[in-house]
Amino acid sequence: MRTIQLAVPPVAELPDIGAVLDRWQSDDGPLHLHIGDLGWYSLRGGDATAQALRVWRCGDSIRAIGLLDGQDLLRLSVDPDFSHDDSLARQIESDIDSSNSAVFGTGAAIVEARGATRLCDRLKARGWGADEAWTPLSRDLSLPVEEPGIRVEVAGPDDAEAWTAVHWSAFRGVPYTTDARERFVSRWHAMMSGPFSSRAQCLLGYDSSGVPIAVTTVWSAGPNRPGLLEPLAVHRDHQGHGYGKAIAIAAAKSLQQLGSSSASVCAESSNKGAVAAYSSAGYTPRTQVRDLRRDS
Image 1 (tube, one colour):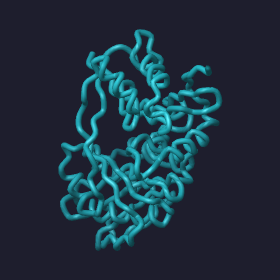
Image 2: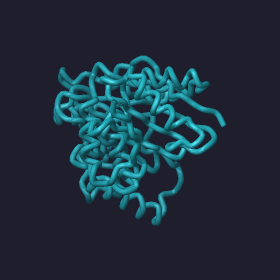
Image 3: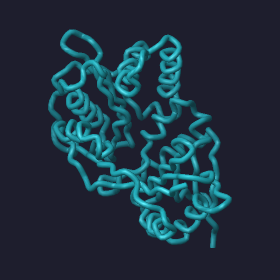
Image 4: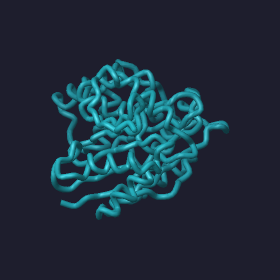
């Protein structure tokens, strides 16, 4: 019987790992780790992305892929054919929750493992508890998608400063200094020239006067598979005017043109405004999910 081994992949393997994640995406399955999550993380560069990955293999076959999104959060996807496999779950459990963990240090930790049924059962039995609730949402793209009602363009290299400025305003809410702008624009270019860039479209939405007010990036997992919105943002000075709904509709239309079967996104359930905006844009909320937490 072959053993399951954990490794940190070299950067050259990133495209192959992304292709495996693509095959694991399904409209009937959970909203788990997606190539878009790796793509957004690749703002940090290919080497850093590879170093943040943990890959479980049995022989030449990949059984699970995890992204360390910070020191204490592992975002994990398991091959759907092995979601109930106890030997795989036991090995991953050992690698993340033993005294000599190959994933986490000591102290608090969070595992996002949607669809990894057996692993979640084992972690709960070891005392891992439920973390905050998240709401997955998806929009079926087999039907026509309406116009968003604002002008939306695919952002190119010359739009990096405008795109990043909107995102910065929405998520940071502090002045976008020259140093911050140079760093973020450089990282944006790294993402859009990186190993997952062929799957991405950055969208930039404008108000009626031509001011950039909303952004998103959509990620394709290939034809007839769910695509992902990651991230989506509305400039802090322009929130509350329906631009979140508009850019979410534009994202669905873009993914439809790329051949995706659905457009997916996940929002914190406590963020009622985000859930409402996606819902108003035709995204259907699915059953809430919770990550698993180990307290310190």
